[in-house]
Image 1 (spheres, rainbow over the protein chains, first blue to last red):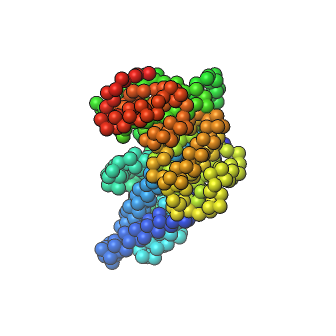
Image 2 (cartoon, chains in turn green, orange):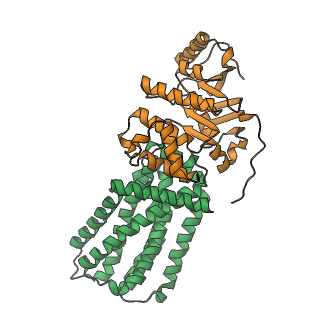
Image 3 (tube, rainbow over the protein chains, first blue to last red):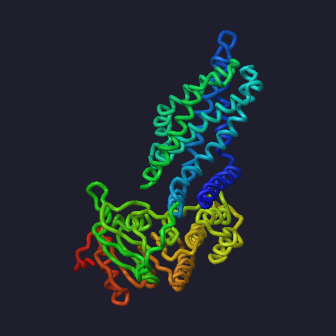
Length: 226
Length: 254
């Protein structure tokens, strides 16, 4: 068990050191998310539409689209110089690779989200501070589901020539249940509703998170095999 | 995790029986059988597309055979056991090195993945072995092909494997780098590591090995002890195979 955890930690550490040196992933994700929000700000008339109604959808579009860039880049790094082959040759269960990449993706995306949230608050003139904890909880659930499925599918798409195109085509339809749930919950939270009134949505999102992780554990061995 | 006992030690490091790998109608590996004793060095020659890389991929557990069996270090390859992977080191066309990390960071990472007790110490020792210790804090991206290949050796031997698989390791190396690389291989062979190498370099391949094989169209057309091999005849045989991509002279299926 110790080796299993150490191996996962090693993959996360390696991804962090690489990102600290290149700063490619975070900057690309952050700028893209910022641009998405800015485009929507200029295209939506906030004097007609209530910010708390359109804001959640725009926020999650920004998170998910920029997150997709991160997912694509994540396995591209492993494909360069055949590093994925190197990982598959180490004496580790293949789920180690999945969990290592999942945790890296989750942390990178979460950091980006934490930078985007204050800007979202300023641009949409929404006070999220009084609902911060429930909002962070919902973002945690949504980001986990996105990364759980996205990591699996990006490993699948990494062997394809058209991986940049295939990942969103495979990912977005399967994400629909989670996206609907987190957008609804974010809207309700911004309208001041308590989490206790959203147990169905929370249950749905948590269930999909578990299903995605479970399916990934069962299939990653076959997906990574050539 | 279940702790599997190490299998009975046998004289053979690699045992292959009727190995077959099909990609649709193409047989990349077609009924290959052979054994390699512990400490032996096998050079596998063959034209491009003969299935040499596929053979290595099967023996290292990267891909499954369509049929047949292979045992490496006493473990059934198809079971994909981590214990088997601990016994092997692989150097292939791909370096499996992260270009934006330094050699030290790369090897410490792999050391942690192999569960080494002191990955930093092992990494430094491996880098010293291949003469890259002075450049240990430079990014791999700045290295020449020869240096990267030496770093690949350091990565492959980091966990002290008993069996090494080398897939055309001389590709892209200049004369000096090839000679340095050859010295490293001879050093590893003298330490009784079992080595299976695919190569197009006939003179180097024959010079270093104990056993010779010629793979053509997925089959071992020739498998012999190097002492029994006449270099000139073998070169003629090999170049005929490369030219025709079909072996027509006295095929000898092992």
